[in-house]
Amino acid sequence: MNANFTIPKFRLPAFVASLGHKLPQWPHALALVAGLNAALKMKLLPERELELLEDKLFRVRINDTGGEASYTYRDGMFRPVFRPTREPDLAFAANLSAYLQLLARQEDPDTLFFNRELEITGDTELGLIVKNMLDAVEWPRLPRLPLASH
Image 1 (tube, rainbow, N blue to C red):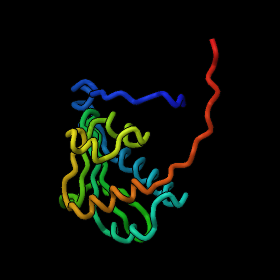
Image 2 (image 1 turned 180 degrees about the vertical axis):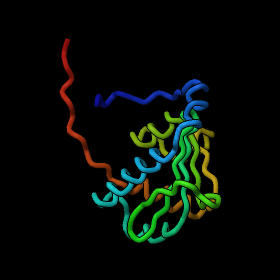
Image 3 (image 1 turned 180 degrees about the horizontal axis):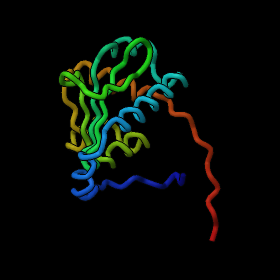
Image 4 (image 1 turned 90 degrees about the horizontal axis):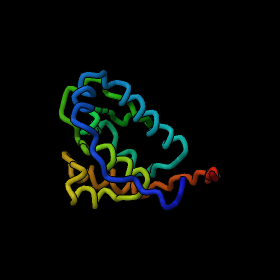
């Protein structure tokens, strides 16, 4: 990826979310949990804080796609929750571009939150624990791909 590439702030058209709400949500939960468990396996997440997540219910909603994923952390693994029976202990909601900017470390959660681009609801202390965990992650460096010259 070009070091000068930045993810623009965008919002998908409203019809995308209206279609997305009608689709099954379980694939989102499986994909998110697979990624979190891969990060666990790669020792990217700080282990001492993980026990603080035990049996907490989390929800991630992507506003402009209509996607939503609920999950929990139990017995050393992240697990999908397909039909939550209670409100999440911690919930995140944002447009796809905000999540992509977070993943690329282009924006931090505080900036997105204070710019009203990331909504965080639920247990404030748990939110700080998760934020600090994410800040502590050392993402592996991917090899640079040679850019084709034309």
